[in-house]
Length: 234
Image (cartoon, rainbow, N blue to C red; front, side, top):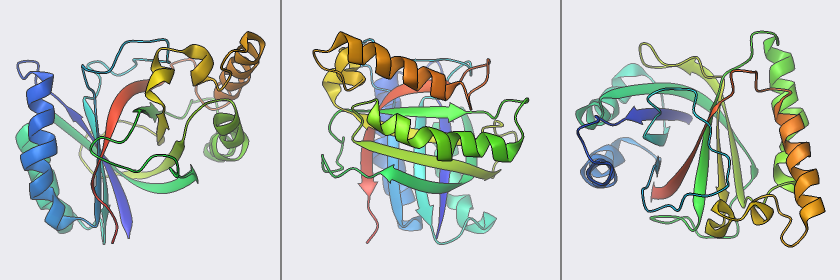
């Protein structure tokens, strides 16, 4: 089995609500017969604005992330999936990824949507780091920090193997984390430090210092979204 992630962009003339309705409706229904499992993350205007990290590098920024598990990423097998995504989106970029789940979601059942909010992060490798140093700094060095300093209840690392669409961005990794909804507006809760300002400051510093070891000065795209589990592995 292989995993694909597609980033989608919305035409500026299409309202976000209409884009999401089509993606989560007709498009997901058309894709489902071609995949083993399907998860869709979308930006949602109903999410409150808060103090959680939001970073923009790619402009315009991706509107949705479509995560797909398939028997093979062979181009003819991908073709009907990519055709459906292209009908909706003004721009589609895709990557084959190797998934690791250091923190599985055992707190809230995956749903439509899943409880809380998801934070989807697109990361490029800084030029000053060789690949293995970058990967080790992220997966071997950062993982524990990401779990113990935050209130996330799911943490998924997707290491990019290769692009599968022409002109796909040079991302080295895509991360998804899920948090309680209240954490979007409560920084202490986000950093797993409810009622403890000193712990908040310590956790935030530890997190930022660790991120600096694998995210360069350019930064990353960090986008609050909602997670929809459209089809699960049998």
